[in-house]
Image 1 (spheres, rainbow, N blue to C red):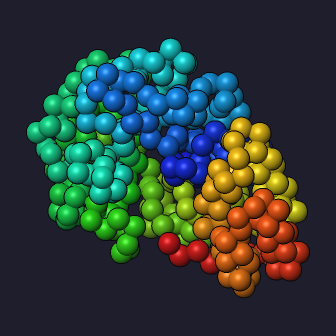
Image 2 (image 1 turned 180 degrees about the vertical axis):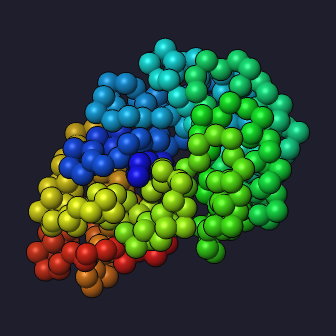
Length: 318
C-alpha cells in the first residue's frame, strides 16, 4: 500500500513535513495545505515559503490549489513548474463555509457548468499533471455519478475521493458505497481518504477494496505518527522517538517563528490529535491547552511523557 499525507492547514507545513519524514517516514507523497491564489494568480508569502523546493528537498510534495478561476490556476501552475514541480492537485473537497460560499472547494461541485468550463480550460493549457481531491457532492451522494462522469472526460492523473458530501463536514460515516462507484467507474487511478485512524481501519478497508493501492491519511497520522508503518507490519512507535520528534519540531518552530505565542499555537494544534495516543491523557491535555508560556508548556508535555504510557493504537475517533 502507498500512503499519502493529507494537507491540514496550520499543521502540515514544511517544517512539520520534514521533521515527520526524518523521524517516521513511510509516506510516499505529501500534499501542501491549499494555495489560494488571488485573481492575478498571486500567492501570499507564507504560501510561497511553504512550497519552495529548498524547503521540501527531503520529501515528495504535491502542491494543492484551491480556486475556481482557471487563469489564476494556470498562473500558479506555471510558477510551480518553474520551481520544478511536475504535478499539482485541485482541491474540490474543502467543506469550509467561507470557501463554499465563494464556490470553491466542495462548493464548486454544485456548479456543474462552471466546473466543466474550468476543467476544460486548465486541462487544455496546464503543462503539469493534475490530480483532483474531491468529495462526492454538496448535499447528496446521488450527485457523485455525474461528477465522476465529468472527471472521466479529462486526463486526471489521480482521483482522491473523500466519500462525504460537503454538508457532512467531518460527521457521519464515509460512504463506502459511493467510493465503490469510483473504484468501478473511474478511468484514472483512485485514492481513498477518510476516517482511517487505526491499523484495523486500514485492514478493513483493504479487505473491502483490494484493488485500491493508495490511501491518504490525515488526522490518523497526527493522532498516531506511526500508523502507516504499523499498518505495514512494523512495531508501534516508541515513546522516546515520539518525544524526540516533538522536541525537534518545537525547536524548529522556535527558529522560524517570532514569539512564544506563535510557537505555542502551532504545537497546541498538534496536541488536539496527538494526545489520544496516550492513556488517560485528559488532564495533561488540559494543562497543555492552558499553557501561556513555553516553560509551562514544556512542563506539561514532559509530565505527560514521564507519567503516561503510549497506547498501541490511538483512541482518536474523529
